[in-house]
Amino acid sequence: MTIERDRMPGSENLSNTPKIRVLVAKLGLDGHDRGAKVVARILRDAGMEVIYSGLYKTPAQILEAAIQEDVDVIGVSLLSGSHVPLFAALGSLLRDQQADHILLVAGGVIPEQDYDALMNSGVDVIVPQEARSDMIVSAIRDLVDARGRI
Amino acid sequence: MTLVTRNATPKRGIYRPSADLVPKVLAGSRPDIARMISRAEAGYDEASDALAALYRHAGRAHVIGVTGVPGGGKSSLISALIRAYSGDSHKVAVVAVDPSSPYSGGAILGDRIRMGDSAEAQQAFVRSMATRGHLGGLARATLQAVDVLDAAGYSPIFIETVGVGQDEVEVVTAAHTVVVLSPPGLGDDIQAIKAGVMEIADIHVVSKGDKPDAAATASALRGMMSLTPLGRPSEWETPILTLSVATGDGILDLKQCLDSHHAHLVTSGELALRQRSISRTRVLATLNHLLRREFDENTTNLAAHLQAVADRSSDPMTAALALLGLNRMEAKP
Image (cartoon, rainbow over all chains, first blue to last red; front, side, top):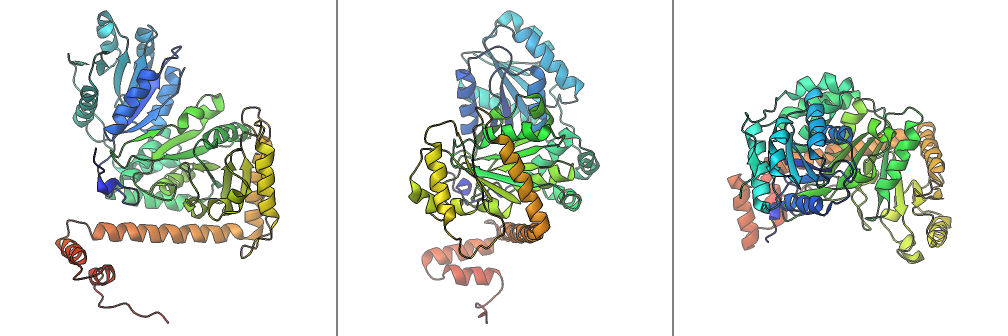
C-alpha cells in the first residue's frame, strides 16, 4: 500500500472532491457487529468517511444521526431476522422526512425470499454474505455517482 | 455472484445553492445545518458567501474545547455534559474530530457511538468530522462548523479534538474554554510538568475517577499547578476536578465550573481577548489556505521553482520570495 503524499498529515487535501460519507448502522435487538466493523474498515480503506452508529438503535435514531452527519449512504447490517419490519420503518421515515436522497444498503443475513419486500421499502442495494469487498465499494460509488451532488 | 440492485429509477439528490440554505440554518433546520457543514468541509467556493453571512450571525455561543489522549473519555464526558446542559433547556451541539487515514483518505468516525442514546442527546446536534490531513487536533472546517451551529442558536458548542499526544494545542485558539482530560494510570508527575497540552487547560479533569489511580493523577496535577505560573498571569485559578461518567460523580461540578469560567471570561474582559486571538488564527489560516491554493502544483511557475530547489540551484526561501514577486527579504526593524 502506498501513502498518497497529498493526504499525509500536514498536507491538507485542497481538492474540492467531496468525500463519500456512510453511516454503518445496527438496528434493533442485534448485538453482533463484527461484520459491520469489517465493512466499516473496508469503506475507510476505500477513502470513505464512516460513522458507526453503535448497537441497538431504533430507526428514528438512525434517521436523526444520518441527517446530522449528512451522509450519502446508510448501510444497515442485520442478523436478527427482523429485517423486513425494520427496513420498512426506516424507509418510510426517510421518505416522511424528505431524506430519501440518502441511499440505503442492506447487508447481513437476508434470505432471498425477502429481497422484494426490502426493495419495496426503499432499499437500493442488498449485499449478500458472500459479496467481495470491492463489490460493496464499487456499488456504493456507482450509487452516489448516479444520484449526483446534493 | 452479484449484488442485488433495485430496478427502479435511481435516487436523485436535489441540489440547492448555499445561499438558499442560510435562512433555513438561521431558523434551526437540522438537515440544512448539516448540509451547510458539509459544504464548508468540501471547501466549495460557492459556499463562501453563505458562510460569510452565517459568520456575521454567530458569536453568541460558549465554545468549549475538550482535549486529551485517545481513549481518555472525551466522548463519554461530552455525552454526560449534553445531559447536564439539556436539563437547563440549552440547545447543545458537538463537533467531534477524528483522524483521516494518510493512506486512503478515509476515516472511522466513532465519537458518536457514546453520545447518541438518551432522549436529551436526540435533541443535541452531534457532527463527526475527519481531519482530512489537517494537523493540530482539529479539522480545517471545524470552526466553520461551529459558526454554522452558533448562528443556528446552539450553545454551548463542544469541540472534541482528535486524541492528542503532547503537542496538539490548536484547540486553544479555537475555544473559549479548554478542558484537558487526564485519565489515571498513564504516567508519573514528570508527565504533568511537561510543556504542551498540559499547559493549555482552563479546567483540568481527571477522568475515570472510579479507578484506583485517579487520586494519584489528581495529586500529580495539583503538584504541577501549585507552582506559580510564569508569564501567564490570570485571575482564573485552574481547577482540577476528578469525575466519573460511569457513576455520574463530578459531572455537575464540571458544568458549574464551565459556567463560572464563562462568567469569568465575560467580567474580566478576557473573552474579547480570546475572540481576537481566535480571529487572528483564523484569518492567518485562511490566508495560508488561499496562498496554497494560489500556488497550486499545476501552476507551471511553481513546478519550475520546485525543480530548482530540488536541484539545489535555488533554495526554499528564494523560491518562496520569487513566487510572491519579491527579490529578497525585507529586513524587519
